[in-house]
Amino acid sequence: MATAVTTFDEAAAASRTGRARRARPGAGRVLAWTALVLIVLVTLFPFYWMLRTAFSNGAYLATQPSSLLPVEPTLGAFERVLGLASTEEAQAQAGSGASVNIGRYLLNSVVVATLITAGQVFFGALAAYAFSRLRWPGRDTVFFVFLTALMVPPIFTQLPNFLLMRDLGILNTYAAIVLPFFFMTPFAVFFLRQFFLGIPHEVEEAARLDGAGAVRRFFTVILPMASGPLVTLTILQYIQAWGEYFWPLLVASDPDVRVLTVGLGVFRAQTPQGSPDWAGLMAATLLAALPIIVLFAIFSRKVVNSIGFSGIK
Image 1 (cartoon, rainbow, N blue to C red):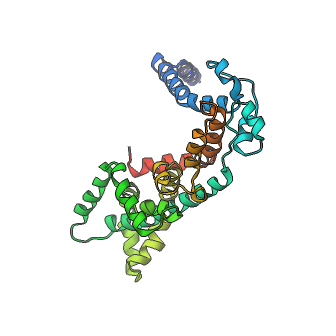
Image 2 (cartoon, one colour):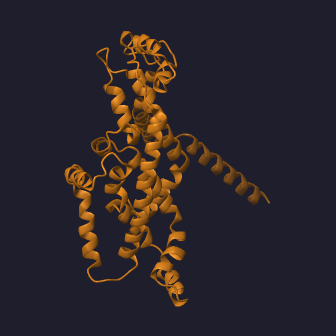
């Protein structure tokens, strides 16, 4: 009995010692957490500065350029952007008196980003299935050549695409903005192919023995099993399409099809008082980024898990 009590006391002491060691993090751990916090703060500071500027009075921004808090806090910048302020009220806060047709531009951005994302995900999935599950001569060579497109800067294709849209007579339309991005992209194909390669062949072979052809296996077996990566790719492509600026600026000067990013550029250019309406511009930028921030915040865990599972580093 004495031996059992002694053993129990030794185990309890060892447990307390282990907890004490875990409670005192080492210098390396403290240093790592400190560096991580600093990196996070540096990363988030531009977003905080955007908020600070958006809630400031533009007429007083120059008087306190280093203030970490909003200068003369007001919602005037948001009122100007949304067209709720009169010209006199806007100019009193160093605004241009102009407003962003944010409702129309937001609708255009939603339409364009949705069409681009739908096309890239669907056609990218088809191509990824062909490159990963089907056997045909030269498959790996074609895939390698296809991936080399990742090394081609997008600016090199802007002029040929613009001339094509002009010759087709579809400038200043949704089609002109969407078509160059609608079909599969190398990133989308590579991303989904990495996941498709990990699906056991036995699953697809069982469907083939049941009489399912390649098309039926793709829609009834592969796609349901790839729901996670498909959602992740949808979010990534939607964010990228939402942020497109140069191409929509090049082919869609008509306000009726102008996307939100281009609208922000037009708003910045309206500077009758000699300098941009920084408070209004930051307010408009915040409103433009808010849907994407919310979207990513909701699905961030799924995005990170799917990227790690697919082997992308």
